[in-house]
Length: 226
Image 1 (cartoon, rainbow, N blue to C red):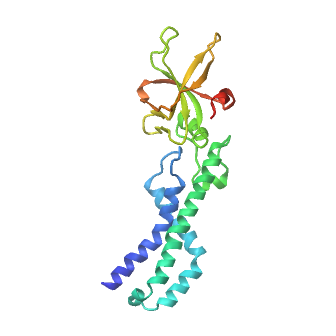
Image 2 (cartoon, helix red, strand yellow):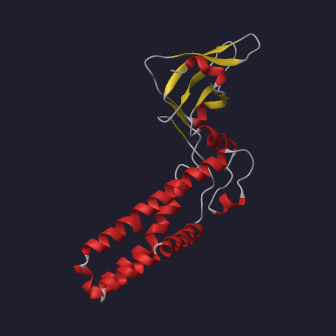
Image 3 (tube, rainbow, N blue to C red):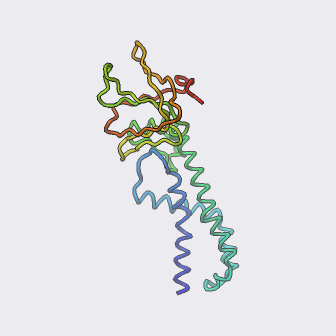
């Protein structure tokens, strides 16, 4: 029974670091979904890198514990090893890799070979491509609803920020804007945001109701910044 428990714990220790890194590296990403095979291979690769880097600690721990059935006498050493190698380091690496890949994907052009090797990829459609570029710093948007005309305007202006959300492929591209703004249209039919509604009011817009989304530059709406 003891050998079985040790075998199970050893399997967890072998696989968990890579799985954590692989999952965190693509969290909130707009890139294409991965197959189970790719996830498994990346997890194993990251696990190998972690255990190679901390091999000296693993060897020391095994020498300290001695016989497998004596592991219960070394809770302190096992806890420290598990906390650092199985949790802290994978979380730190996964988070750092996620930020690096997001920065690469938000830049112009395809990802470089180094980033691509770690999972950076192109967006799945044009909407996801745009989302990659304004999900980090937010953006000013004008949503044209289906049925909009000059006589009966159906325009919703707002701010996409940290408390906003957007549906990504393969989900419908619905949008939740955390703050509403009034929309103006000049004689040349150029749309812009006029005033931010106070207090803030969020709005959910179903994908089926969206005909067009204008992404405004920060300069175009600088007067709305608080």
